[in-house]
Amino acid sequence: MVDLKLDFDLQTLPVGTRIGVSACLLGVRCKYDGTSNYAEEAVRQLAERFTLIPVCPEQLGGLTTPRAPAEILNGRVITKDGLDVTESFQRGAEETLEIFKLLKLEAAILKEGSPSCGSGLIYDGMFAGVKIPGMGLTVRLLRDQGIGVISEKALI
Ligand code: SF4
Image 1 (tube, rainbow, N blue to C red):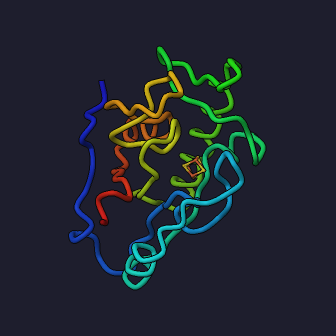
Image 2: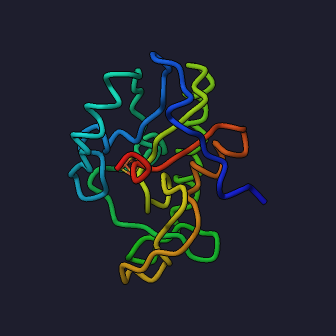
């Protein structure tokens, strides 16, 4: 079982470190509904110290934008319509890991709550807006490989 708290302290990272960041946090409109989760102030501060590399595991997994919202239930990723999209989410996690390896990235800041990018909380699978402790498929894979992941909530 992966340690849910495999994270890192931003203050300890040297200036110029390359960090993988959920593309939606950087303003890319890759979210399931075709919008972004732009975290303007946090991005501005981060960009002053680090090099930010955008990744969107769900797009990397071949999913369309927009796409049906999905949540994790019993270890599977299921859309609101009841479609099992675990394979695409897993592919996206693996492609994201490839980018991290290629660019030798050792740290990530990913969007909390997402079935791919959530690092401490995910939705409970009932599409009722309820979050529970857990992590998305990409975070699980990155942490398995020793890559530190924190959420954007750690920046606020
Ligand atoms: Fe953002 Fe991650 Fe969802 Fe892509 S997979 S939209 S980067 S939270």
